[in-house]
Length: 368
Image 1 (tube, rainbow, N blue to C red):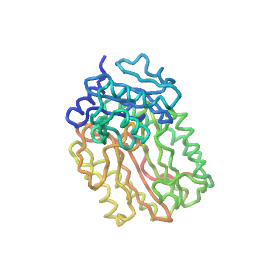
Image 2 (image 1 turned 60 degrees about the horizontal axis):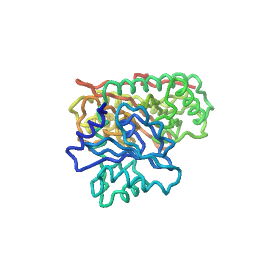
Image 3 (image 1 turned 30 degrees about the vertical axis):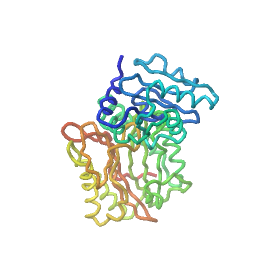
Image 4 (image 1 turned 135 degrees about the horizontal axis):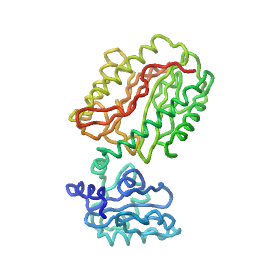
């Protein structure tokens, strides 16, 4: 039977310069085929040319994954000798009539290894970025995808709630991150999580992308936890900020400001609104409070099968929201060398507005 997602890709390519698409292992390949491969030393490349059955080049040891698929898939397996790779690519690209054609790829995924095999295997071909066309495939989530994301949020929230009672003064960031990772798995996350948890306390919390360190929690710290779960290939991405005992008045103040900015950003989303408007709504709260200099990143990014994907919520992005789009709202204030705050929620654009998939309390909570 036909694969509706390949039909969707064919419709997208009908208005593009591409004669075919070639994909490395990653979310788009999995989205189209339902197959999962690791990016490894042996090349795996999916090739789709409209009007033909999709084809895949892969090592023989991966061939069993392609059995009993509900749609036709032409396979080009090769053995363990790397000398066989070029022949397999030449054969596949010749049979797909791609010599001298224009082939689209994902520039953030395609490696030089596969790129050269494609270019040499299809003489006269032109390999170009199809980032825009491919991003559009996964941009608007359907009901089953949204349900998987909702489950990923539930897993993440339950895992954090199970971790919080174990956090104590003197515990290191790495120890908290380890416990949270265990709780994510216990609560049902896929083993391959969207990213390693960010756990940062005190001065480290002023670094938006800090890595957990051996630093131990101290009274008066703010503690930023940015974490997520994966469920059946779909992810969640959340952040909450906590107080370690009694904190200075200014830290309570910036938490309240970020909480208001988060609320403003969540409220601004609906179909037809530009991504820039959401960024501006959240940013205006922080700027009005006098902390605009300390909000150093965009308000959010798309989520789905990847931790960062379209759409991107930044001040210059005029892309309009559509029902089914999913994104984060994550304003922050970061005081260098002192403390930082971020509050992040996962949003789905609905027909009439926007829904937050996450509902973990956003008010500051004391832990430790």
